[in-house]
Length: 244
Image 1 (cartoon, rainbow, N blue to C red):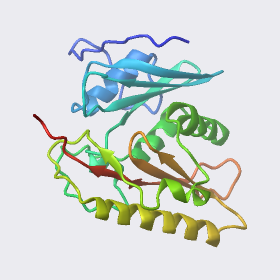
Image 2 (cartoon, one colour; image 1 turned 45 degrees about the vertical axis):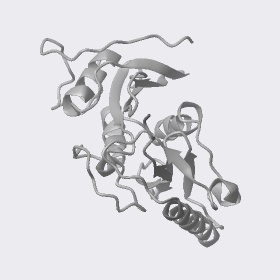
Image 3 (cartoon, rainbow, N blue to C red; image 1 turned 90 degrees about the horizontal axis):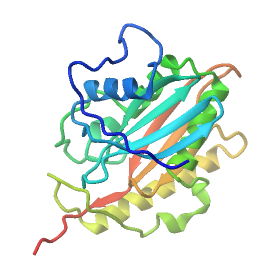
């Protein structure tokens, strides 16, 4: 399906989802209006860049392609009910709550995290465990094009530097420090898998484009229970481009 352009300008007259109801919005437009109201730092001009259709479920990724340090929005749908969540860049460190980063938080606070927004998504769309599993797998694979089974891919981490030019307010980082951080992360991943080689209830995902590694762990004890923890690790190295 071809991507369509959706220009959204938030105005008072637009109707958003009612906050007092644990249910999704009635349209994609309403869900995006709602997330823009809750997170006003997100740019209002958004373009649909990808849509994944999964029968009664779908995922839509939107962004403003003309903004260098762009932030994105994810819209999830189940049976014509919609719920949108932010997909911020690494600049919003409080949202990602990075496990391996002690950079000062210089961007406006979002007062939320990706883990919290996923939890709200589950409630709002009344997702069953298998539905959440399908959506998350498609988010990681088809939408974000991440890689997994990282314990066997040392070449992605060891002595690697991933420069990020989408930087504002932050100082250039020393590449040696970035290399050290990524090497430590790989060692942690391998150690984690070796400890749990009999029953692996977690998975790491490498998001090269966004400079992150995600870890999701299933803590549910029952088949029909959704109980997870989500952690994020920053792998990009902040670099200020020289201007002539």
